[in-house]
Image (cartoon, rainbow, N blue to C red; front, side):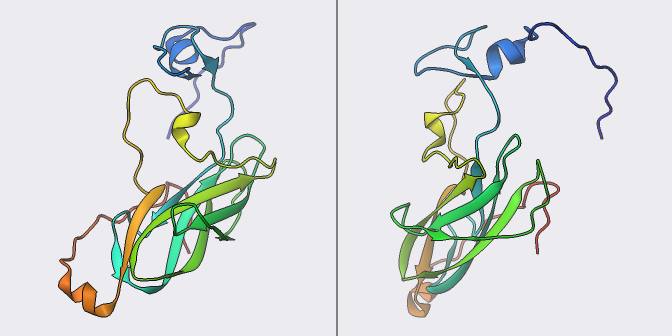
Amino acid sequence: MKWLERIEVRAAAWDGHFQSTAYRLLPPGAEPAPGVGVELGEVAVNSDVLEPDDGARGPAGRLEVRGYAFAGGERSVVRVDVSVDGGRTFVEAELLDDLGRWAWRLWRVEVELAPGEHELVSRAWDSAGGTQPERAATVWLRQQPRRPRPGRRGVVSATTPASRRRRRRRRHPRRRPPRGARVR
């Protein structure tokens, strides 16, 4: 637990490293430096797939997909769409309990998978009508190249019972929801 020890009221923005250099959106090719780029504002609406794990294999047929979404500031998550074909088509997910401001909003949806590989994609909408960007790289701070987080665009293979027996099973660590999120 963290304890607040002191509050300092200032007439102008603090010029420390994080506010002046780190928490800024940079144009392509720009190097982080004090005052370069645009200050970050509220957190953009975002969502993530928790289950199934990226690279998971399973039988063709019905599959429950679960995840979470978040909208910053005074906004709330009002809708989450999920695609099993890389974003070509979407279905609306069921939103679970609303735990209030600053809490992740859990969601779930059942989808039908044909045999083959499927790319799972989630997309959230907030109460101001904003939607999750198609690619985080188009709007997010880039101080150094980073690999994308697994799960946002995950590949899941659905197999028929005969083809499943022929494939070697790999175990993937199970992802956990963020701290404080309740899972039904």
